[in-house]
Length: 401
Length: 53
Image 1: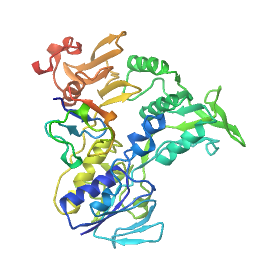
Image 2: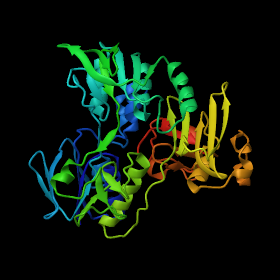
Image 3: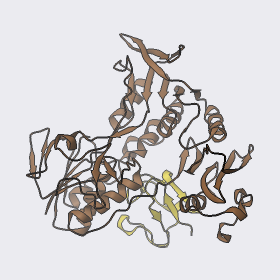
Image 4: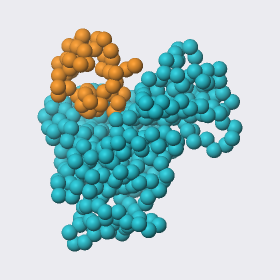
């Protein structure tokens, strides 16, 4: 059985490992765009911040793939796949024939179509090359504008300020983490972020990146107003890298459409990770990519395994603050009960949204205690009516439910 | 001994089990794992782990 995996990121690498575990004799080739050994993308933030050295980026000891008989062709982008003949062609003109193709091409950073966006000094953060370029540019260009106040934008801002940059985050909506938090929670997070020396501008959207021949000089904002900057990092979301799949005529929506066995619309071709769309969902999170990769590996070898989707892990640490958000946290209708507990000293903020006693949504900020339990209860739509006040207490015993 | 969870991929390090593939004996506390130890599943460093409460 010969398998070619397109993509050397998490999904591709974990699929290769999974395949080898299941079949000691399978021929496994990975073609990856990046020239580096496998590295987990979260490490890029710590590298950007200067918290880990270059050597610590890479996950596995040198030669790990050779020892497992997995061929990895780094810096060799796949340029074409043929679902009919089951072949993958790389940019070096190499054509790999196989029995199964796994598309694990991942996602790319969304580039905002701004005037001046092609100036020197405008970056996204997706790859190690991006991180190295940003670190290098920062040396003589300390005033950094981060476009986007979501998860990645805030983590980038934290990393840059740790490096000594002067950072301003521009978020076009009126609160940070607009999807995950409500106004109060977002306000607390904003204070925390500002106390780290990061300037936050809400309701602020860049219309144009200003500059001269030498690079960036600032931003022109929608509604008038300008801001000074020496460099810009766009953190406006990600999109699946579906080009190869489109070119091959596969069924593509926002991502490459797969069924419960990670099969695409053509037999023998599978997809997993950021590039894949399963039951209308695209994830962009490690646990989903990991699970999909493992299930795809099993299915490619004919060991039918069903993937039912991944429950998103809801607790994240943003700029040092634990943030858990599940369900509907900003109810619009009047038939919801909302209970809030806020402790300005500890910075803990908890909120539950009930619909007839059933837990519809929750925010848990500043603490991990009870976060997993409240997530489970909200996902299950549990009736917590009798405990609606006590559940917010730090010492609440969830086992009583 | 407490278990620790990788916040990136969900892998649980169980001290009672250790991590034989990477030379970690059963009974090794998380705090005593070697400096360069990474999540055996997804490869992120120790700083991404949190205690399982």
